[in-house]
Image 1 (cartoon, helix red, strand yellow):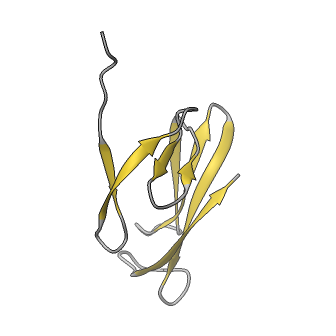
Image 2 (spheres, one colour):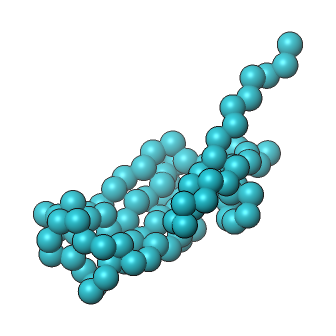
Length: 92
């Protein structure tokens, strides 16, 4: 009997849907980009009391493996719904 498979896709910031592949160690790789390390938990940090995310940290057990940092038009937002200007993946 074969193992079941699930095809997943990711949407780029430009709205393009791209297939995602699994590497032998279980990490996910956007076919045209970088590998996302294996993780089992995400933690979201916000700018103050706003609804604007400052970062998302990916962890495997107690070890942080990656983080995505977000930048906003005009710098650190002080009000909700700020306009996102950039994001950066940091492998830890």
